[in-house]
Each structure stands twice: as structure tokens, then as C-alpha cells.
Length: 378
Image 1: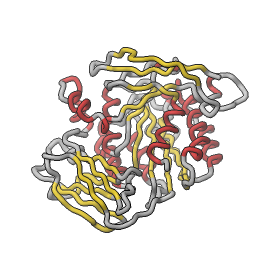
Image 2: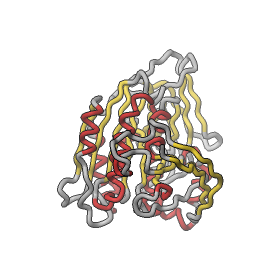
Image 3: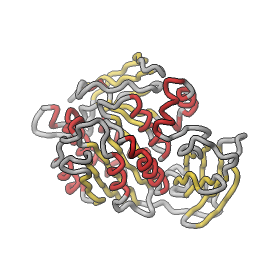
Image 4: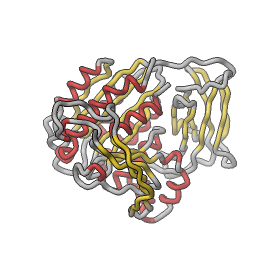
């Protein structure tokens, strides 16, 4: 059994970190694979990671982005974190309404379209794709193609609660997509990541009882490499998916930016469920997109939100501070959460210390299964 020290860390906006508390724990048999060798490269439950949810720590983020050190990242990437509203939709029995569609209009067009999650909640940042806020935003709440409510977003309140005067059903469909950077810079961690993914896939069903789960994958590199994207469309067959994972290796790349825009394009082209309990995309990378492709990236992130896809970025070693904020913006825009590998495992190159508050270090596979259960569980 692998002994592990789980650490809660407190980090300042300048990037410095101190240990806030420490607690010993050991991984359960479900955390590590039972491969026939004790080599770290042949078992899961080795990489360490943590989560930071900006949507749940909005004031912290706003304070961070008000400083000269960090506010430039908004204009660099074209994501702007201004006022945020929380929509909560329930039915006549007080049951959360999942997959309700929230549309925010600036008077000319729908600037943000989101789906409520399994808790019936959606966080909307109307000006996230524009540095100029409209003088007035209106919203509509839609369910299964029918509009149920409209109104105006007021600065005097940031919460909107609505009850559908009907009973609603819960979908059993769950889509899990993994989009993975497979360029040479990921070589220090890709073999470990492959084992973590194998373990997560093997445990996902137990975290999603009574759900119809489909799995999809997109590995990507960059233009001029052996391939740019290598997708595997959604399938319920975990063996098919895990064999696909095992066949991948790191290579190519060269310059720092990679074909993130094309990876997202291909990922969105896969067979996502039109009716779903949850649609989750883990975006695993260590490098940003090419600067000239950022408009395309923003478009794809907006499309993902419109499809009700929650993106959970995972920052690997080599991720710089600028890319950290890009990934956090992507998580915000799609109602996801930011995750990052940490140095606690001793594996891979150095990992950027995130500019966040207190967080808990976990084994990556346990973290991913926990988030799958949180966003797609019963």
C-alpha cells in the first residue's frame, strides 16, 4: 500500500505557498491499479493534483484580477470576469432541473448560453467574452425547447431562482470526454497520465450507478507533427477506450503553443448526447494555443457552453502563469473547475504554483473520480 501525505496548502496571489495543515492517509485498493510490477510507470495513484473552483471563490478571483500582475491576462486571452449571476432552477416537487438552458442577451444577441447542472445551477458571467459590458442584459430560462421565464439582470441581486410548474425527469446519459496533449513536452508525465486515465475509466461506472456512461478521447499534437488530432468517438465499451489510451505516446510539438483549437473542434464534433445528466470534458495540457488561434478557441469554448459541456482543465508540468489563467477562464465559461498537477508526487518537471487560496492535494485519479461523481453522480 502506498503511503501518502495529503497536504492542504495556502497560496498567496504572488504565487508563494505555505503548508496550512498536514494529515497522513493511505490510498485504498481502488486508488491504485494492480499491475504486476511495482514500477511507478505501471500503476495509478502516483500523480498528485488539486482543485480550485473560481466560481465558488468569485471575490478572491475579482481581487486577484484587479492587480496589475494578473489583470492583463483577461485582455491577452479575451475572457473577462465581471459580474456573475447564479441561476437555480427547480421543478414543482423542488427537484433540481438539470439541462435547463439559460440565455443571456445584450440587446442584440445571446452573448452567453449555459445549461444547468445536475443541481439545477448555472453560473452566468454575461461579459465573459467581451471587455465591454452592455447597459442592460436580459435572460430567459428554457427547458426542452420551451421558454418558461424572462427577465432583466439587476445589479442589486446576483441570484435568480425559478420553479417550473411541472414535474421533470432525470436523464441517465453521461458523456465523459478526455482531451489530452500528446506532444513531446508531455513526455515526462504522459505515461503516468495514461495509467491514471485507465484507472479512472475503470472506476467511473461505480461512481455513476444507474447511469448510461459513454467515454470519448481526443489526443492532439500540433501542425506538422505525425498527426494533429487522434480522436476516439464516444463508446460505452471501456476496453475499447483503454486500449486506445495504452497505444498513445508523446512526440512532436517543437514550439510551445499547440493545436488546442483543433483539439477542441474535433472534441465538439463527437457524438455528444442531446439529452444528458452531465457532459464533462477533461482538458489535459501543459501549453497554450497559438496566439492567432485564440479567436477560434473562444468560439469553441462558447460552443461547448451552449452544448452544456462542462470543461475541467488539468494543468500539467510546464504550464506557465499565463496558461494557468487561460485554463481558469475556460473552466469559468463552461461552469467547470480548475485542476492542476502538483510537485508532491516528485514526478515530471516543476509545476507552477497556482495563484489560489487553500487547496487540498489528492491523488489525481481520486480527484478525477471525485469530480466525475460530483458533476455526474446521482
